[in-house]
Image (cartoon, rainbow, N blue to C red; front, top):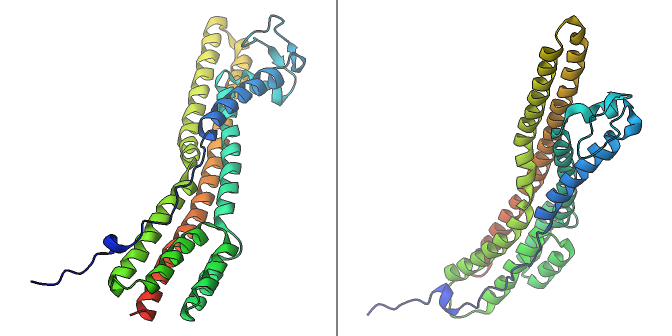
Length: 286
């Protein structure tokens, strides 16, 4: 009967990687707070009675102020879509700050390329403990994945029930499991930036169309050449929606591209870490 070789999963301990517990409350709290803040800015700052020559004394949810004194107050007349656009802009700011802090932490200390070179140097000298020390100094996602792989690497050195190929597979599996826990943390909440990039302009166009409808409706009711001035004012007010939407979408797109570029560099470092561990073990512990 042919001898059956032990498999990697039969003798190797369970993964040392622990699931990270992280709250994502910001993903549903922030949009609500931003929309409320957007309405407050539109209603009480842009729509302050002191900014209009003919304020609506009755007030209410959407006062009908007339004759704004400055450009800031004129944005108020862009309509009820304006506070939504302001809220979306605030969301871009909030999630950009949140992603910046998260990705900055994930990048760790120093250059990822230098960190990997140091680990490669220590592994070449069979000094796994020194390589683990470099991971503690790096303190980023690449360091976390590398540390998980190095722990399994160290276990496999003294493991006598598996052959080299099975040990390499065990190390590779550990790296993959650590990677699966790190990457979702990096990509979380980027969906808000990508969504605002595409939806912001559409909502702005909706506000512009609504403003144009109101302007031409008023022109039809008043009639005569005297209403041309009011029409021009109405069109300029409607275009504030377009300006706000395009500006918000542009900023969201820029920030999304910046963060995805940073994440790509971290992902490349993680991939290189896994390759470093498997190739080092395969060459040194045949």
